[in-house]
Image (tube, rainbow, N blue to C red; front, side):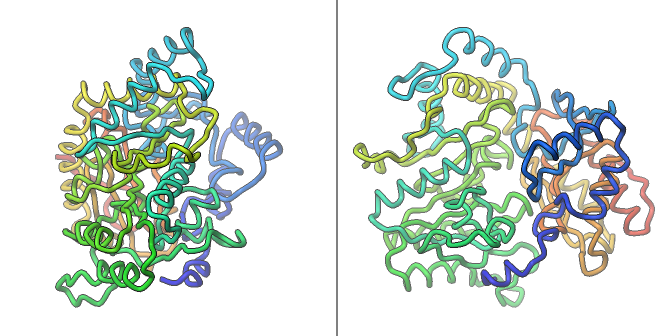
Length: 457
């Protein structure tokens, strides 16, 4: 899809739960006076922007899988901005943060500290051939580090990335990103950022005529060969928001093409890493390890903003350059939160739990929506599930279902105006997961004009 085609797409269809739609305004009008008053103060204090201010509601509490709003309602949170793999306020994470605050709350950049070193060692050991690490205060900053490192390692600045992808809202990250929301009217973006159409699940848009001929991978190969000086292919190994995996073998072919043409493969797993897809890293599904991996969001345990770049040791080639010179580069508090998060994921078996519960959930949803005319596809890996609705039948269905579910106590994200994206905590109680999924099924069936009763097995 061309840049122009992306730009022409209406903003409310780029994300779905943006804050300027009639449905959003109707939802806010239904909130209680306490929430309404604070939302009004929020608008006066913050610059307005799509996707946040004006906000949807007011949160006053968060614990485990639950958000509590200012009207005293509890919501099962299947959104969480992808930070709540271990739930909100996990006692081991909060305890580690408290202890670290008492001992060493901040570490100037010229010094190191034990939690930061331990975190880097733990992360590096998770990669197939080991890795060296840089920490950053957020995902977009970590993407910028990865881009700088690729330039330093290859001597090239050109990149290939994918339309529809998201790598952060900063100008450099938006340059390689492919969402119109973050590119429209931004002015000049980074030069040399080539984009190709992504592989598409379910209904191939590449003309393979029902038998996969990997034309999507051939497109990347053509650009690599044509440009000749591409430094990196930067991608999500699976599109997170629409839960869109590539065809089997796609990433191995892209990785091989990168090696043949002297480019690096960078995977952005900021929302996917640490067990979300039923593997520690999403790339493990693809048997295609990247040269550089970017992670974040859940790394801080749902408390502390933290991201990391994991690079193959052979890429430790820039001791005289500043790749990511951030004030909070080796935050002892953030590192303590991350180490505790890794401990929780290991000790509670959350990667395996994500895989097991995810298999059940995917089977349940596919069975529940069998024959439902409004549902085009159900996709999932681990505890990341996507229900794609047919906007040709009902353009407003996804947003309407989202608000209907929130009224019933379940929150999730809408992606591209058509996909219900469900990402519960990995340690969610099984009965709570069943309850949340049943609410979603009921709301979709009701919107489709059918029976909203659900048989949960």
